[in-house]
Amino acid sequence: MHLEKTRSLAYRIAKETRERTTMTDAPYIRPDMKAFLDMMAQVNGPKLVDMTLEEARASYIAMHNLADRPARDLAVIRDLSCPGPNGDIPLRLYDAREMRQPGPVVVFYHGGGFVIGDLDTHHALCTEIAALIDLPLVAVHYARAPEAPFPAAILDCEAATRWVAGSPAELGRKASGIITIGDSAGGNATVVVSQMLGQRPAEVPVVLQVPIFPLVADANGSGSMAAFSEGFLLTADTMGFFDAAYGADRADPRGFPILGDHSEAPPTIVVTASLDPIRDSGREYAKALVDAGRDVVFLEMRGVTHSFTNLRQMVPSTQKDLERVIAAMKFMLENPA
Image 1 (cartoon, rainbow, N blue to C red):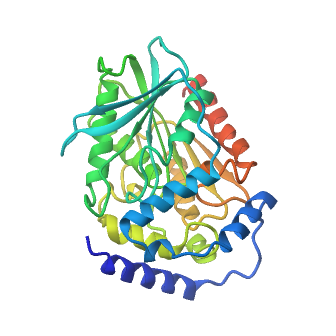
Image 2 (cartoon, rainbow, N blue to C red):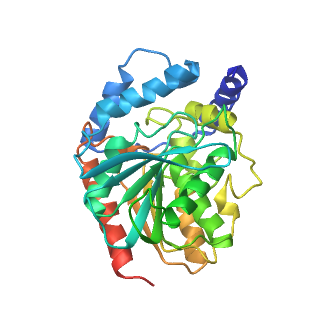
C-alpha cells in the first residue's frame, strides 16, 4: 500500500498537537526511564513515519529485542491457529504447567497500532505474564492494517476469543472464564472484545479485562497528547501514522469503545503511564466505568512512557510495574464482585 496519505495525516496531526502544547512544568521521569529516552534520542535513523511498512515492523521487533527482558522458559509454548472471518488466525499458547485443571484462560492482544506488532514482538512479555499469573495464556495475531484495515483486527480478536472460550481440543485446556488483556492497540481490543462478548455471550464469560495503556477514546486534542507528543517514545507523528493506516470509524464503538455501553462491563484493571500521549484515554475509560458503577482498579505508573511493559531490560523499574498489574489481577480474580 502507498503510505503517502498515511504520512501526510501523521504530520498534520503532529503539527496541530505541537501547536496546542502549553506545558510549562517538567514532568517527573524516573532515572532509568530518562536514561533510556536519552539513549533513544541519540539514535540516528529515520522516524517510523518515514520508513516503509516492512522497515517499521522490523524496527518494532528490534526495539523490543533490545529493550525487553529475555523470554522465560515455560513448560508449554506452542503455536496454534483458529478459524477467522478471513482465514486462519495465528495463535500462541503459553503455560507454566504442562497440564491444567479447568480455570480461567488469558487471551492477549498485542500492541503496535494495529499495524506493526505480532506474536514475536510480545513473546517475552507473554512468557512473563503467563509465568507470573500462573494461568494459560493465548496470544492472538490479528490481521494488520493497512493490508486489512478496521475492523478486521477486532473481528479476528473476537473470533479467536470465542474459539478459546469454547475449550477446543487443540487448546488442551478447559476454560471456565476468559481474561482479556492487551497493550496499546491491544488494550483497545481488550475492551472492544469484552463489549462484543457482553452483547453476544461466548461459551464462558469474560471474568476480568486488563487494558494496558489503551486507546479507548480519541486522544487527539487531549492534554496528555499535547504534553507528550514528542520525546516520550510514542509520538503524535506515530499515532497519526497508525490512525491513518487503521482507519477506525470514529463513530463506531469497535474503534473507540468509550462510545459503547459500560453498564455490564466485567471487572476491570485499567493501566496507564504518566508520560504517555494517550494516557488521558485510559483515564477517561476508568472514569466511565466508575460512573457506570462497575468494579474497577486504576493503576497509573508514574514516570514511565507508553510501552513500559516491553522495556523491562533497559528500564528495570518497569518489571515491578508489571508485577503490580499481575498482583491486581490475582486480587480481582480471588475477590469477585
